[in-house]
Amino acid sequence: MSNYIPKTLDEFLDLTLQDDFKSLNNTHRSMVNAVRRTKTAGDEGNLEALQQALARYGELLDKQQEILRDLLEKMPSFNLQSYLQEEFHRGFMDALAAESLAVEAEYPVYEVLPFKVRILPEKEMVTINDRVYRNLRPGVLAGHLKRSVDRLNAASFDAQRFLQSLALAYDTEMAKQIVKTKIEVSEQEVLLKDIYNTLTPLTRQKRDYPAQLFAFDLHRILRSGMTNAPDGRRLWLGNVRNNKQALVVLDAQGQPQRFGVMKFYMEG
Image (cartoon, rainbow, N blue to C red; front, side):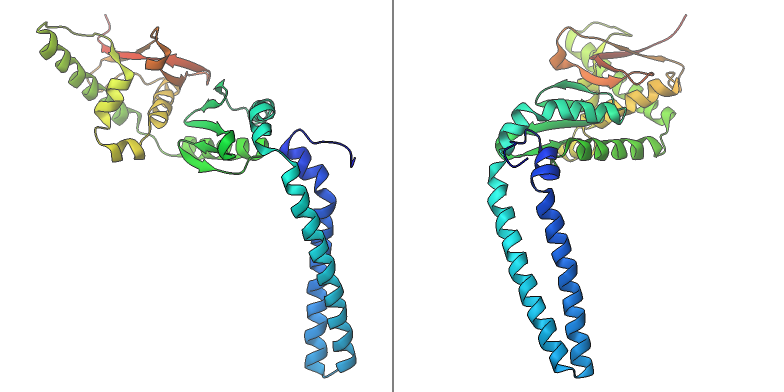
């Protein structure tokens, strides 16, 4: 095992460093017991027992320092940047599948709605919706995302209120088009990103309600089956040719789709 070069972070932590972790933990517990014996001997006035306990503590302290040196020497042997560049993707995709999380992935960016995960090998970290995250075991990262998604799904969601906000934003964008083109139009397609910008005109609002959360709310609308605004118009989502103009939205079945436009229309 000593000649084996670990390729993944899990292997490095669980194989290369495993014995050192166990030794460090065992030594720590022994040191706690030695400190306890030291206090007991002092409380009871047993100087012989106190001297023995202090000697034992000194031995354990030397051993602890030796284990610490071994760990510090081994740490640089793992190339975290290369791992994130070459091996992380496979393990992360497996971990997401194990958590039953849908993902749109093109390394180094992953859309695990409503979260955008970006791998930054040169900085030895990942970001989740632009927030730094340094727990780099794939299973730990996937588990964190699953818990976060579950919390969002469990939160209350007013579908009718969201649909009304969408309809108002849509009407605002339609009014802008009429002013711009001088042509009276209705039920035209509008870019989803323009709708999002209308809903979040301020930078602070975008920070509190990122586009990924907007896409997640669209998913919750599709999942609920409630697509009629209070005035009776039905919401429709469509694709665009330019993926840069699209948002990744989970459909009613939880599968990722790239929607870029929307409209409200009257049926019949």
